[in-house]
Length: 149
Image: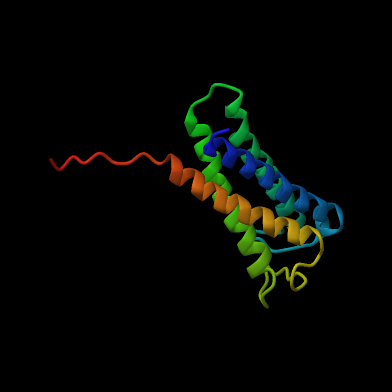
């Protein structure tokens, strides 16, 4: 297994673990927590948890399906960039914004890694996705040709 395939598989598995943690929290009572979404109108925190889960599934599919089906490399590269964005937004929302006085769209969660074990699963998986996708894209970046000669 090449390093890039390994990173894609690890990133996909980690994204699914994070998505599962958010789906589990959604089913454990986060499904109907109200919130104001940027002044546009009501947008439940639970809806955001479901979107997080769907995003994780899309990222995982985008990373591994091209290993079995011939599609342009752009597909998995977009999934890798999406994984970075997904992980960064999830980390900011879950572990910084929600645990401040203002919260995330007025929602303030419990301090630390509570509720356990979902919070620990999601933060670990999001960090794994973030790091593995950055390394993956760095390994696959094409060096620029020197055209100054």
